Image (cartoon, rainbow, N blue to C red; front, side):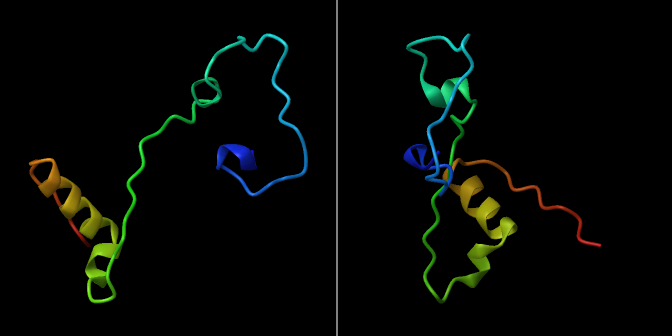
Length: 72
C-alpha cells in the first residue's frame, strides 16, 4: 500500500479479489477517497493544534457557526 500513500509496507503486491471490477479507481474500490485537511502551524500558534482550534479555523473558512462541546 506504500504506492498509494496509505502505508509504509513495501513487502509485497496488493492482491484484489477476482471479482474486483477492472478499470475502477483503486481509491474508490477500497473506499479510501476521503477528504483531508493539511495543517501548517507556526510555533507561536500551538492553540491551533487541538481539535477545537482546527474546528475554529474550518468554520471561519466555510462561514459556518462554531458549536463548541461542553467541557466537563
